[in-house]
Amino acid sequence: MPPLQPRPGRAPLSLRRPTAVTTTANLVILGGYLLSGVVSARALGPAGRGQLTVVMLWSGLIHVVGTYGLQSSCSYHLARWPDRRTALVTWLGRIAIRQVLTMTAVSAAFLYWLRVRLHLTPVLTIESTTWPAAMTLVAYGASCAQGMADFRRFNLIRVISGATPAVLMIVGAVSLRLTPADAVAAYLVPAWCGAVIACAWLRQAAKAPWEDPLTRRERRAMLSYGRRSLASHSGLTLNNSSDQLTLALLVPASAVGLYTVSSTASSPLPFLIASFGMVGLPTVAALAGPAKAGATSRVLKRAACLLALAAPLLAALLPWCIPLLYGRRYSAAVVPAELLLLGRIFAAMTRVTDDLLRAHGLPGFGSIAQGAGAIVTITSTLLLARAAHPLAAVSAVSSLGFALTFFLALTRLWAATRRLVPGHAVRGGPVGRDTEGRAQDSV
Image 1 (tube, rainbow, N blue to C red):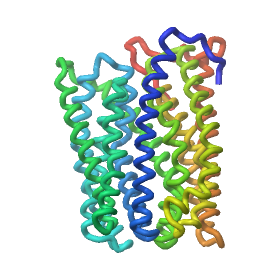
Image 2 (spheres, rainbow, N blue to C red; image 1 turned 90 degrees about the horizontal axis):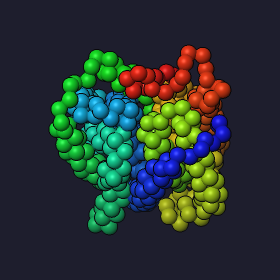
Image 3 (spheres, rainbow, N blue to C red; image 1 turned 90 degrees about the vertical axis):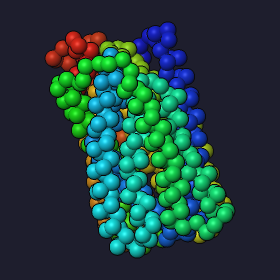
């Protein structure tokens, strides 16, 4: 990365205060995520947990593809076009309605196929059809708040949908015999509560002083950024879950349940430092020139320092935490979890790097890096799923895929920031804003 630039007076504060608040929210969400994972794993057993995992992963993939990357485009352009926010939110609301209806229809058809293959109950199937729609509305509300640097609303929407399921899961496990359908309901009810809050806030934002509708050029810019973000987000989702999705087609649900516990136990690292990218995206996107390069370096270095402190501690805790929290039925998940932890270190830094690439107007390159990692993981999983120790082998190759993704993304970000430093400008003129304050985007 280029050397640090002199810090403007208020720049560190603009990063630190929202980062601290967002980190706290992420820790709350992480605690809820881990707690709900523990409760569901103990109550459902490996087979039931495997069914829940497959439904969650495919619903998430439908959501990511169905949004067309516009939630990322929304965050970026709200930060870059502060004078067009009302028009942008109004246009986005019409798009969101179409996407929600389309995703619900696609989800219904796909989950019917999963019901036949995995013998899902009718209640579980019907519940899950509305999951992508709820996630989409929550994502749009959070991304709009992020783009406007309103991190209070941003974190509120995320905490409601991300941390509340743990409470409902505990109540369900204590008061009745928890089933996969009950577990999905525990996730679904808070998601729709967050979606209602997000819709109410977006409707209020759309009623601000009237603005001319988005021009054709502005809509093209939104869709172009969204298209490139779609490739990046789809690659990210596929890279993060390709091992589990592929295993679900090759091994019994109980093996998928064991692997899911390994993945969940090693997952705190990306959550822990995700706030650096979440806050860094609108902050860095609003800057230009050497200030933009300096802010990018500071975000990466702070994320790396926190990761260096947290990773060894988590590695030491995993061997006794998994049997203690999840039960002795999941003792076989310890070795895969340790191997996956190596990959989670790279995945955590990749998540921050991807957000910074979007802040530099480069959302599309993440798809190349994530796609390369997913190809490595899927190919190796297909080859090693029948090995003597398949879960450990798949964990190792999954970590290799995460490492490849990070180094590719970091190389592209280094090239993007290097040309912002005087003396390293590339042919074609300065990088930053054009004459209208719009971003000059490229892959």
